[in-house]
Length: 337
Image 1 (tube, rainbow, N blue to C red):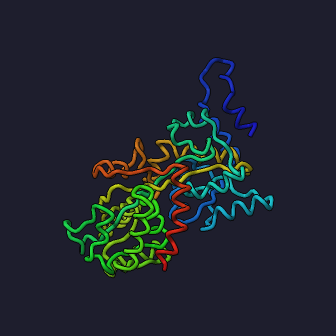
Image 2 (cartoon, helix red, strand yellow):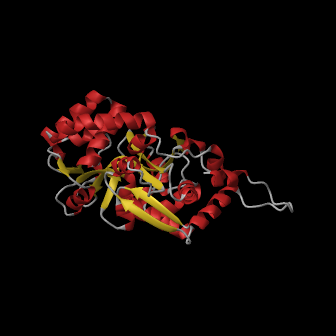
Image 3 (cartoon, rainbow, N blue to C red):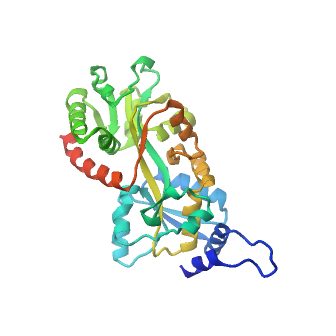
């Protein structure tokens, strides 16, 4: 930590020449460490992070560890005195248990400024950096759904024509209804999931991959998804799906954090800060639309797509993230019942 502070406050060289910028100093110290360990939950996140970092910093050895219960793992390991990870990449609500236990380092305003990051990306007092989004939407099979049928409001999913034709993973769909429920009201959310369950006979799968397969195989016509992941499948995998401009909608936020006891603190800071810079966001989207940021001001294709269709999007903050998680827990047994 002292070395990072020294790098940020170092004076110009004695001969008067301009030295490296504060951001360059952090990453030069990261070069000395040479390694960064990232804890996250799925390969769809790990691969873009690895690709973007390796292309920008070819000298950096990037190791990712996957665990769907990553927050629990991080807490348990810290309690056991094990500090093996540098960066934690997860949903905003998912990092709260780590923040509340003091397991995360705080990234300062000078560090944020050194990488040209918008101040609004600094969350939880600097313990988290806004990385990418998941904007809830409905994907559809362009071969089977006519233009005039495309849902424009969430209530359109309750049209009898969609009975037995909607699929979603249990996590994505329940989180999505909870998120939209923050915008339209809890009473709406509970009524909506009951009708999806009883009238529409929604199909729930344990994973998003299985839900997508049911859509592409023609067994289902609508899929609860995200704009980012739908664009990835449509434009890069060349699959016959598109997304419906359902509005209003909710953008879940994923963040990057640095562990307070990171074994490679400079590499952790360099990686996390660069990934949320404009250059880093562009690189992440080039690696995968699934790690693209739709937030206002982001230099991304996904942001342009949101603006093109003029959909109203609420972007998650700390308070809404807490509320979404709590409502999710109450909606889940209703939807599964």
